[in-house]
Structures are given as C-alpha cells and as structure tokens.
Length: 177
Image (cartoon, rainbow, N blue to C red; front, side, top):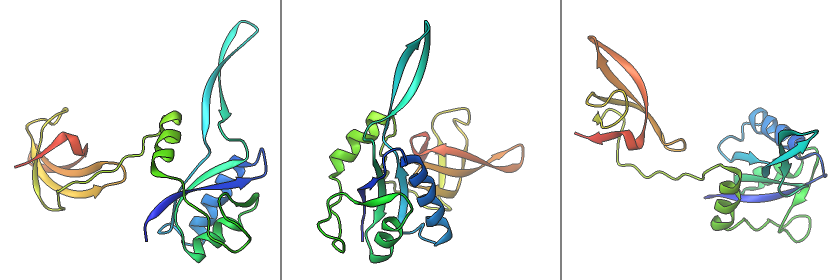
C-alpha cells in the first residue's frame, strides 16, 4: 500500500481544529503507520494597518485540509469520523473511497506554503562508516547510528577527544569511505 495525499472537506473556519483533532485521534488510535501528515494550506500575506506592516496567514483553500495517508478502511474511518470533517473530496457516495491528489498537485501546494516534499533515496546503512564532507565536522569520520529518510538526516557517531559523539547531519553532508 502506498501513501497518497487526500483532500478533506471541513466546516469553514474549523480547519485548524480538524488538524488538531485528527492528529490527536491518530495518536490515541495508533494510526501513525497509516496517517502521516495533516496540512492546512495557508499563504502568508502582508497587510498594512495604521501605517504598520503585519504578516497574516490566510487559508489558501478555506474549508479544506490535506491529509497524507495510506487508504484503508481503518484510516478512512478515522479521518471521516473526526469532528468537523464533512467528508473526503473526490468520493462519490457515502461508502466509496476518494481519489488521491496527483503528486504534481501536492508539490505545487506544498511549495507555495514553503514546505518541500522531500524524497530521499540513499545507499547508506546503519553501522556503515562515512566521512563528513561539509559543515563544522568536515574531515571527521564516524559510523551511522540512525537514519531518518523522511527528514533527510542521519545520526553519525564521530570520535572527538577520544569519545564517540552523536552528530546529526544531512545526507548531503556525508560521503562513503
């Protein structure tokens, strides 16, 4: 099963409340492996009031929330029955599964918000020895302790002053030895 982005229709003005409620439900119902991210699409706009500049966030799509999930009966049920949710966009009828957004649509929306959809394919493994190629630890080598593909980061144990010190680095900051 692959994860996709879906659009959820909410009561207007309840987008942030739905986001909070859904994130709590995901946690309490143990759905972290099926429902990943909930995003309220917003744009930052600059307003001038009384001669003062003020940055305001405005909903890009009022009444809608984006949810990244693996569509199963359970995940559909959790989202559909979250308070404030009126339904999925792209489903015909009460029991049918909705149509996911196209990947290029998601990229445009997330970029507009300043959130990048990152996908990392790496050929590193936990325990492998690597060299730091940039940043303050350039030239140091260490072994990979942890890999976080979603964030594009990894934890490397670097030997400093005779002790292994965990350092968080981005994939672009290391090279294979």
